[in-house]
Length: 640
Image 1 (cartoon, rainbow, N blue to C red):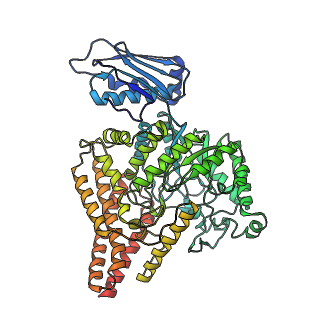
Image 2 (image 1 turned 90 degrees about the horizontal axis):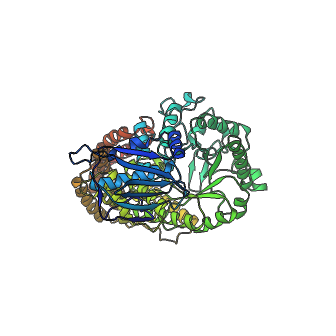
Image 3 (image 1 turned 30 degrees about the horizontal axis):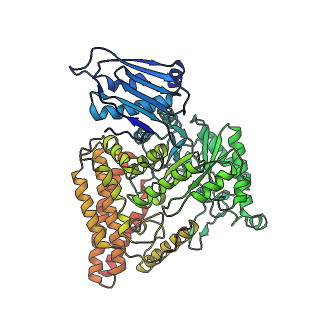
């Protein structure tokens, strides 16, 4: 039996094979030829793998016929028979995916090709992935090209590189961020063309309301903030200004100028302006108006202004729904021509209520699960799997356009991109084949075409790396204990401040649970420290036995190893400061070990960062690691 990823709608494999061929003759419907040319896709080149120079190769030319038929625009029918290869499709995208299926079949029995009858089309129209490049870590062009290659194999047709701050070289602001290494206009133009040739819509993305802290931290732009002096977040801690003043005409002029600069590099008919989490909206300069009219009115007025701008540009605006989805009246007050995005990142939460609401309004919408990689070092795999399957299931049942998997970079973006490969492959699988598809299908695909692992254990190893959080027994959401105690969320300089940090983490997670209607859990951490170390020991043994043949194979293995070092460090940090503080000798020994560990893993982390990403942002990303080094040295000095 042969494998195909994603699982086709129908497949059968009659007995027999096409013999190896030395050449082929391709006959393509003229309209599909034109589509291919417009996209920059060359099927003759893509089909070259069918040619074989082996002595047994047939001297006759293999016949390949591509016919246009009325069907789903990305669907195809593929027939491999004694007469040759016949592909029926509505357009160039379907041809591209049919050729991908042929490559997978060829991989399994090269140089022959098995007879096959395949009918396939996607469960969801929009199958997207969003990668954060706005929080410190900006990938190199080589990395971005490689991601687009992987996404095309996964039949992802919508990609966004999330932007906040100076990750794009806006022409008017280079003097504000002289140490940064942003994506240039020419680079985005090249990426746009590259994506198009792989039938991926590369969508411009720029936050235009909240998450503007990098801009508002500058003296030149601080006056545009709703709260210029910052604000208290959820009555827990102070945060710097993050949200623009939506009533200030300068705010609108600022963001539209940014969009003018960005949009000219993209051919997409979409633009994602985000507008999520304007935490302090209506709590500063517009407090009185918010009290009189409600903060939702402030928000909606701004939404309409941004949408008017997008409409004039001929673009469909995408935006997050977190500010409106708890209020049906606010959803009804949105412009009718937008696409609403609903994010939920916990497997215990459900998309169904919001999906039903958005369906009832007639708005186009996408459901947005997460890779669960951020704030977790190697992810939270079981949570991610449940989250993606629920998003796909609800989108299919309640008329969603699709899903947009998010891969965020909160709190320094410490996780390596390879930790998200299982999530990317699962999103591609379920968005195309539906939530009933088998995870084993994604495992086979990743082992053969992403990791190229001889042992066929790489996918399971990567997936299991993301399940270490089960040993933490911590009621935390959107993060893991091992990461959270190391991170810059709630910094600490004393043992007492560390205790306060842990309590704040529990309080914040309780708020997240309440917002997402997750059942109450006792706010107590019961870390199985020894069990976790044993689990990581076994994973290290498995990593050492993997035989990755992909170009980035050695890099992936080193990323796995250093991720384990960071997990060990975070778990030891919590265990030591919680249980060993009364024994000064043991605590001193632990602190010295923590200091040595971090001094070792930081240079490795830098090398791994530079292997995939641009230099700018690394110092900011790892500032809290440097803070931990100072904390360890200070505590050791006090204990001496």
